Image (cartoon, rainbow, N blue to C red):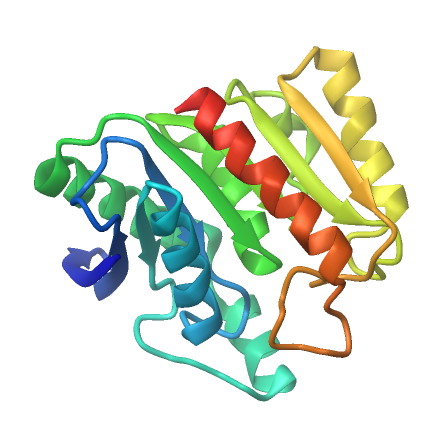
Length: 222
C-alpha cells in the first residue's frame, strides 16, 4: 500500500486528509474513514491501510486540523468543541478534492465513536455517499435521520454506556417507521470494541466479525 496526504482549505481554516492507496494505485472504490475523539492518530491510519490492502482508496479527513490527543478529558473537550457543520465541511471538502485527484464519484464512509457520529450524519447530509458503516456513533434526531437514503449498516455494542441499547432501539424504531435503508448489527461488547490499541475495551472476536461485515458491505455497494 502507498500513503499520502491531501491538503485543502475550509471556511474555518486549512486541514488535511491521510490517504492510503492499494499497491497497484488508486481505486475508484473509495472509503472515507472518520477518526475517534482522539484525532487522526496511528490507529486510524492503520485502519486506513487495512482497507487499502482490501483494494480500496482510503481518505481520512482530519477534523481536528492536526491535534492528536491521548487524555480523555482533552479528547472530550475537543469533540464537544467541534461543530457538526465544520466537521461536515471538512468531510465534504476532502471528498471534493478526492474527486479531482482520483476521479472518484461514489464514496463509502465509516467512522468510530465521534467518527461514527459524523459518518452517519454525513450519510444523511452529503451527496455522493453510496454506503455507510458507522461504528457506535451518536444518532441524529428523527428529523435528520428520517432523510437517510444511503444504504447503512450501524454497528454497536450492547455493553455500550454512551450509545446505549436504548438509543439504538430508538434509531431502529425510526428506521422502521420511515423504511430507511439501515441495518443494525449488534455485538455483546463495550464502546470502542474495535480499537485494538485499547486492551480495556478491545473485543477481538466482535472486531473481526464487524470488519468482515464492513468490508463485505462496501464491496457490495461501491
